Image 1 (cartoon, rainbow, N blue to C red):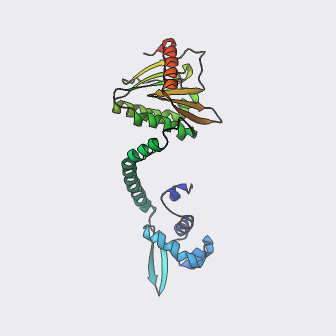
Image 2: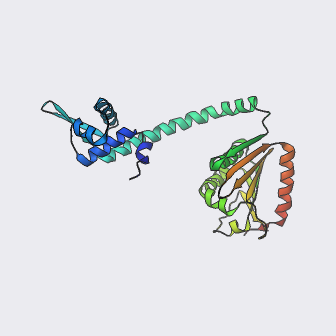
Length: 252
């Protein structure tokens, strides 16, 4: 069993050891738990108290001796509900704080023109920034979309297009030839979609919005994005996009 799910539900390493031991042995005193888990007797009650508070362990007192027993694992769903409620509240707090934090970021670091964002999360951040800055009726442009990126970001961009449409934005997208034909493509009323000629490949793809240019590199060993804020640079990349747009093949 992958124990990561129990850690994600808030159980400590010692709590996991004790709970799994109780599931295997059933009702028992602390002595066998100490022996089987290797947790010192000075700490075992603290661990059991934590499991009791979480609803995973109960106990009976028989003959002056306290015996602990595991509750049904279905109780773990209650911990998930608690975690979801906590995350929901945290999300509301974050959404409330973001406008202030963004204002402070631009106020204090307005001289920052280039940012390097690493990993798949960094690439998603470029697109999230675009969605956050742009307003209804504005248009974003993407040059190229390599096959490897399509495989990695498929779920993210499906959701992203729903967010674009909901916000009333427009998009023009130039796909790589292999990427476009790698699967059935669905029409998107908010987006004009074309694909590049077969001999044109883009291991890096480019996202243009407002005065920003995001250059995303996706290879087997490297995933990063460079975000540039500069009107002249953004305008030059837009001209590059419009040139390639004329070469692109219209989709059905």
